[in-house]
Length: 330
Image (cartoon, rainbow, N blue to C red):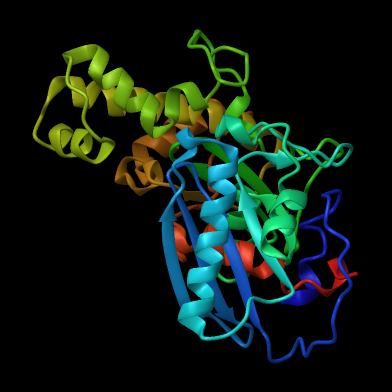
């Protein structure tokens, strides 16, 4: 597993603490998944990574600001220490919304806006006294699913995050593609035809402003005045609720348009759809596949659309796998 991880942190800033002696063959892997609403931590056994030793969550509470998020991460690590009855390891992997600029070392493109422009890896190291290896959360998901999950036998994998935000990661031969600017796979900020909703990124009509969970809930509310979670919208659609049906039809159409553009360029062997929106059966239906095919420069669409075998574990598992990478150790 370790030989496939060196591309994950390419171009990303890391702290420069002295590396103490350790036995990599027996140590556990610690990972943090920094989400918009929750921060999740996991400890994995390197020899059996599919069965977590410990897994805990705390709320992100991003409205309280950047320093509060740092303290929440430190609190979570302390809770993991208590659960494991052992000290935190020398290095910890972190999956982040947004990406770390290869040039500046600062976080950018995060929909948790208070993280943008911050040297997260340095600041975490200052308060937690560990070395942190950062990667985009979608990259972590894609790596985990292509190594341990539903796409483990596929060569080129496009991993999708379709939830509070919309992101993606590309894995080829078990290596994550990062790109010269660190934005490889960021399909959520491609524009959709005819869409003008402002996006936090400063542009309009991004896929994220249409296909994310909050965007779909807002669209439903605009039709009937009722703000409910996406899962409730799906239930109402199954009962024939007209605004709910219109919301899911919009998702199907726009998702197909946005994804087809990626397929026309990358033509992956498999596509894994993670995130809360990815739980909708609609996205895996023959109707959605046909809607995708209609946008392709091809008369057939045979690429499998896969549910994540690791479920909501993919992001945090991928983050933990970062800490297994000997190529990034100083």
